[in-house]
Length: 325
Ligand SMILES: Nc1ncnc2c1ncn2[C@@H]1O[C@H](COP(=O)(O)OP(=O)(O)O)[C@@H](O)[C@H]1O
Ligand SMILES: [Mg+2]
Image 1 (cartoon, rainbow, N blue to C red):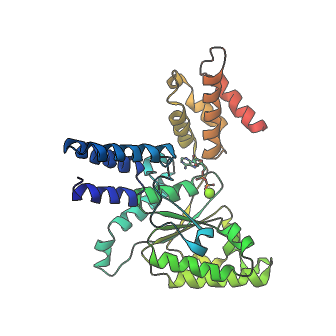
Image 2 (cartoon, rainbow, N blue to C red):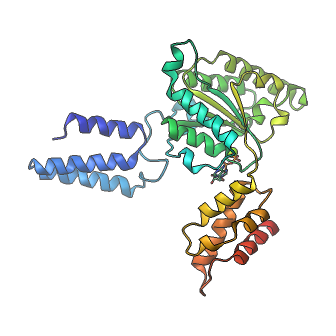
């Protein structure tokens, strides 16, 4: 039968949301059982693995049901995923990447900091235009730090629970204290809009006051990430509650070139493209759009009836086509 190390590894892979490892250990256990002459048990295990795979539990990011899945009232407020994203997948200006690396380093070495009474940065605000990688970076941090990523959709939280938002926020912040993870408040402007901005003053003011208070009182081990495309409307009092403000900017020409090269590298002949020319045409685009243009070009090449070869002109046409739509 399975030995204790296999069972421990099995539980760990489940906790980490690593379904591939989970199945591989389960199959090792099946092989082990067979070697010991327990053919029936071995077959049962193999069938169970196959059944789980068929049900689609091996899809990226929704692998094995996570242990810390929010339940009850929280299930409508938080969604959780496990990420395997790494820093190497993200294109950022050096100054932005260095700030992300610093967060990871401080988190990994928190006990060294604790000896001096210091704690790692853990309340961070990402801001910048859409499609520059704020959401992706939340996932990268979760992947690098091996923590579950809880996402709070503030927009729906506010509309769905109008009048009760502050009390729902308390539930979320209680969870932040008790369950270590990365808590991602996307579209943070929906919550932290300037009190002077006028909108629905009563509710907005209540929410803002609560979030100010909750952030102030937070001494958890979790990381609180907020992201906004509209930093100009965030209430100034909120800025002081964050340990770090990180700006995400549109990519420079060098980064655009890197993104294009990287996205097209699987296509034969792509190394002959004039990346300087192509990146010039994409200045002002965000990375999400640049990746879409590259994906469109690849689709055209692989689905074309006639032999279409990759060329500067065909990519330029895809860029123009994207701009038109
Ligand atoms: N800096 C980046 N590096 C790599 N891919 C990126 C980057 N920014 C955006 N993308 C691509 O665009 C998609 C959408 O980006 P996202 O992180 O949602 O942007 P934001 O949250 O800033 O609006 C990502 O899933 C990723 O494929
Ligand atoms: Mg986003």
